[in-house]
Image 1: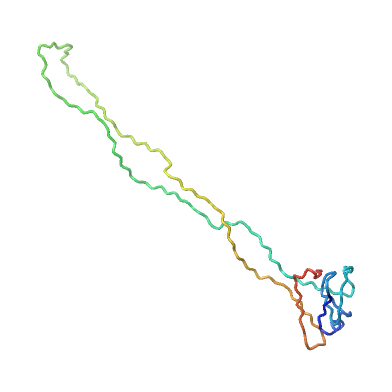
Image 2 (image 1 turned 180 degrees about the horizontal axis):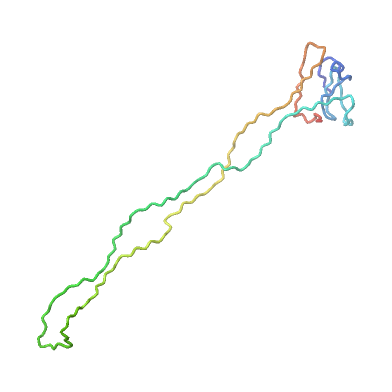
Length: 186
């Protein structure tokens, strides 16, 4: 199906020197004629010398992701000293000295009649403290991945085609869709 723009003038008014101007459409597609109906055949894939192709551009958005550090968890261990009091039973020896009367008929053996000191050692238990490290508890850090939807917006630019012909007071715009796959890109 051929489409006519309905501008009512020839392409010569635009300075093209032809009776139809193609607006960058691909082979086998409908073309827009100025003042006449024109169809481009599927066999003509070469650009004719009387054609002018105007590329229409647009921006597309490519989305990618990268891994960044979004935060951190710090666990700080601080040494706190506290005094612990423990009751421990200990034993010790004590001395009691008493004098007894003996049988006077008992013979005195090895009597040297010299000054003498007798030493009797006394023993006691002392408390010795030894400290050893033990594990009292654990703090477990677990990381889980969660997935959430995040909306992002970015302005995209595109070109719109405005066809103006000279010699007419009424100027009309032809807005071609840049997403049209039949547009020929140069």
